[in-house]
Length: 190
Image (cartoon, rainbow, N blue to C red):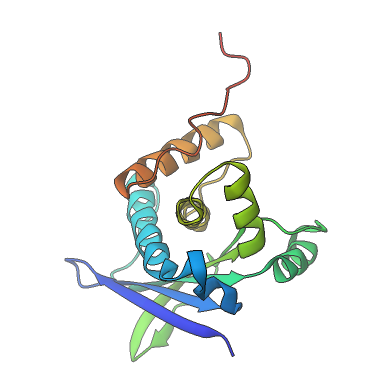
């Protein structure tokens, strides 16, 4: 049975951001991953607030907002990629925005379900090892990336990528993680 945790953050306007974490694979709770759920919640909350501040074209009613984070493995991620993106391989993170969702009651209150972020442990570990990064820092980056996708940020064009990457770097800096882009070279720099 999946393990489930959640964190609530209430702000001055009395709305609550709920980060619901579901662990589908027990390996997420062992070794290097022990206690990672607090880091994931912190990264999700930081990304949400930075994303909302950066998106002047959207606003939410004064209601509670929920973000789902699913911790899984490469097998499930490969299946999700095949089903939703026609890609036959696992990836590190997938985001499923829920923009068309109707608010629904949660504990007697109205909640907006912003969407879900799914993380694949084996791919994340391999990428972190290959880049010589602490696993937890790579997870924080991918959570920030995924939550920004839930808020409508994307990287399909160079301009979109620059905006999203700049925001990711800002959020990561605020939570004590170095830029994941600092060693990447830009092409066509004059």
